[in-house]
Length: 538
Image (tube, rainbow, N blue to C red; front, side, top):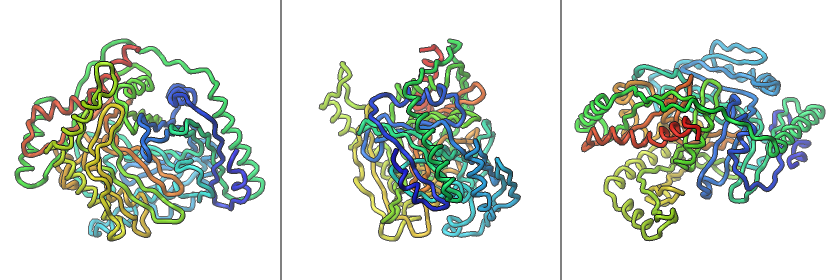
């Protein structure tokens, strides 16, 4: 095992990564099935990629045993210990919530409220004001990393809802809240596995947590971590669990917004565009279908139908969030010796790869689709709008003069599709971290429109239900301050025997209501097909 030497020299208040690796040329989903009892284990998570692309799809990460859960809604939050290590963790951070109101502390739970934000604060003052992000900071950064063998070797992983925007912007309350989802739900994973697709290796990771730094504590933590790593290795040879058979009936799909209702929404938004309120607004609707299939089987089918750079399966305990997203939300990279870099990577514009009749890439057809994408006025106009939004967001939290748009309008080829992609980067201002950057950039323009705040206000007034996690993000925040998350799209929430699938369409001045409705149907198709195939037991 590596990391033992760093553990012996670590101080009180440290988190030390102990790890062991081996060759691995198998499917990480099958391994995750063994660890998570076919995805049924509460709080299990899998973040994987279908495309091995440097910096964006090299690794997959999974775990089934976090020690702490943190979630919040509105002003209320709770930090919950999930096992004895979690109770020890809570004991170590219990005194860090003095900025909150009505704080209650027990061995297994810390709860409280954040204070109301002064509505008269400037944008810069709001960015540094107390928000739920401060609760996440106390958990994510409660211990200081003594070593850093991987970018992600533990920390917070989970989801932040679209409606978390209410922490920072004053939007209308919106209409019906069907799922009553939290604004965020994340777990602190002290152990995980990492699959390096390029190197074809798997690493088993367990983190020692030092709250007093004594020799006895270090010995105990080393023994505990060794036991966790052994259990990961044993799982490689464990028997594959079996999923239950579904009922085999075709699901009847309903929606919170009918065809006519959505077309009326489009017509109304077109008037807002013509009046100059917004340039674009992304209207969405939810499709609802009952299901009896295993959630992991649904994910397996979606993974096959719509392979993407950012695929995820998160069993939060109250429901399961799964998806196959094409687009990153925000990335912040920390460096011990240099500045933290923020990155937003707009994706707008899609064409299929050029496959021949045998399923192989035809270079001529592939390049033809690429040329069409590069010369499509509508796609280029939308992409330019997203670059402008990203430049504005990055500038809000970057050192003056450090913002740059790298490789604009680049074609990036994935296994099934090719996208028009640009990268906007900046050097994060001193005193700010990834969570400040998240507040400054949420929500992504591909899910809102432009200008973002005005578009979000309009959407709150006209959409039939609140968005919940749709349009939010899923990813990780490490004790070192590294942050990476994807937009929650091409996804579904499974809760109480129903699948909730949301899809949207960007409305501009010349949008055709019928075509925009069909766009939502097209975007939801992969999720609906995955559900249908899983329900047939295939």
